[in-house]
Length: 243
Length: 172
Image (tube, rainbow over all chains, first blue to last red; front, side, top):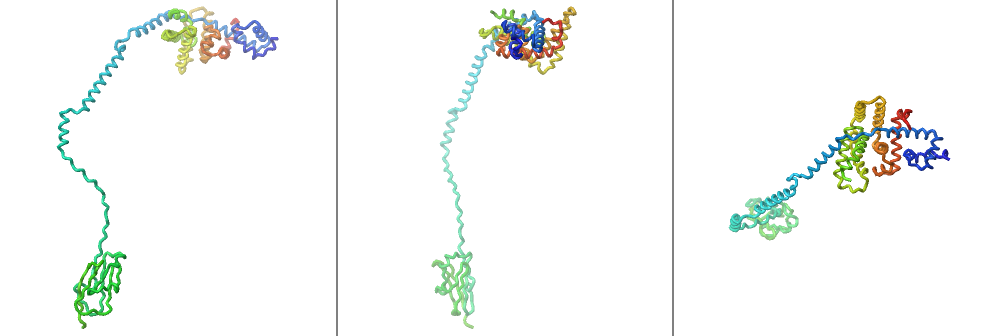
């Protein structure tokens, strides 16, 4: 029943039909379909015409000199292979020899420059021996700067040294500059005519005041200021007689 | 078979293959020569694993494709027209013969304008008269692929040559 075959199935056999390689049975099926299907029939006709056109195309004759030219080229190629230039042929040997020579020169140069000749070596050694060894410089250590606290200076305010004062109660005043520290105040002693009157004196860090209750006896008197039992200041004054 | 015999047997086929591919007489000559030179260089390595024609055609097709890619950016159309004109001028023959030659030149021109993958199967099938199986081996492809490429290539050619195909004087 060729007319019942689908177009898509025919297309599978299309090439073989054109090539004429289909079995007789399949060929009959295709031809039956082509008779009843105008689309496939027309398409097949066009394909056949095209194939005919292509096959009718004249074959080109090969140019006669093509072979001659080809063999000439092949001979050229062979000659270049057979007769290699000597320099090219021995290039590896040349390269090897040249690199060996260069390497040798390099080695000799390195050995020559690295080995010190004996004539040069001796004086250097002697010089080294003759030269006294310099003591190594002491390692400089950075000294810590200790801030020295300045000792307080005792300044007599009143009565002045070798001064003459009237016969009346006296205020003995002494200034300390710079000031004493608080803990050091207990070490300060005031001696009036060798008698410790510190307990009656008012002692601050920068000042000492002692006020006598009554006027002192006319005549010379001495004042001493001792710190930690050591006399630091000693002066005299004269009290006038009662007028 | 020595190389000289191979050259003698295949030179026309290779030349025709190249000509159908590039549609240029001089270029086809150069391509044929290059194909045989390349074949000569590798002839010692050829161990007969494939047919000689398969081996040679492969070399030739590769050269043709390279030539095609080289020319890709050139104005192919004008060059082809010139080639056709030149060929037509060279024909000092009768009117009928001239008409026939003109038809052939147009067919050749249209074949050359096909994309390479369709062009090569059309050339191998209808100009070189190889079977689909042989083309499949040559192009390292399947028979089905070759058949579909043939059908597609023919469709494209049919469109381009529709007026010629519809002429009643072409015998079927």
